[in-house]
Amino acid sequence: MSEVSFISDFKSLIKLRLTFLVVFSASVSFLIGSREQGSINWINWLILTLGGFLVAGAANGFNEIIEKDLDKLMSRTSDRPIPSGRMTTGQALVLSLFMALAGTLILVRLNFLTGVLSVFSIFLYAIVYTPAKRLSPIAVFIGAFPGALPPLIGYFAAFDKPVISWIPLVLFFIQFVWQFPHFWAIAWVLDDDYKKAGFRLLPTKKRDRVSAGFIIFSALVLIPVSLLPTFMGFGGYVIGIISLIAGIVFLYLSVQLFRDLEVKTARKVMFCSFFYLPLVQLIMLFDFIK
Image (cartoon, rainbow, N blue to C red; front, top):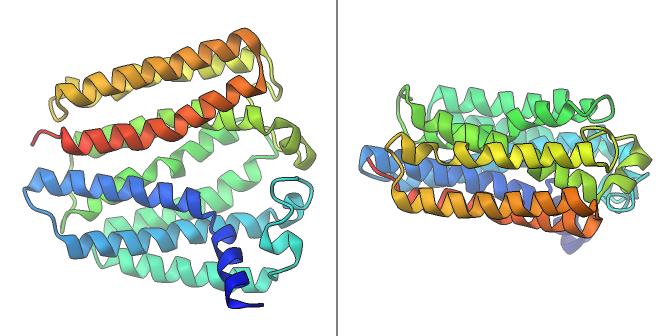
């Protein structure tokens, strides 16, 4: 295996874009926690970024190991390193175990709670959520928990001794609720491919108005949830206005999907979700009130 080929396969194994989103979310939350204290420890931010990258990469690696036989059945995943045969399961396992151990040890340096939450996120994502995807649509609910842990991990990493506060819980809740319209839109777009592997992620297991209704409901719930920072006094009016506008756009596209049930509309909802979360988190960072 050439160096270029290994790098390409490693990026695929850790799902680089998803890992980047996880690290971004944790990093922004770290900076929010730092702003609350009045100063930023950039060394700790780098430690969090590295440790978070390794932990997220490990979780995705374990996911691909467990689903290697299923990945062979789907067009979008059949060329991943393990199902394609470019990387053995043993090689992927060694890499994932190393990343999990190294990432956890790095994050424990910040504080014990950060390390524990990191291990918990790997367990929930790889051991609980991954097999649940073939059993029931409730897998989306299960997966929303490890998916919403990065803000908690990032926020608590900013403190030598984590403090009890509503702020990390609100950050967790926003990301938790966001995942439902996000994942269901993805499941709608990829439903045909998912069925080849037996994944059941849409609420009714098919593209119908009930599933679209669930997307509308979750997008609707996201609006008041995203306004909590402003209502609770640690977010300014700018984050409130941006969250409201972004939430209305999200909801509008979801209603459009309910009307036409088209994959192209679901794709618009999906892309909207990609922009929504980093936008809201960045604005929150700059409009945070101590």
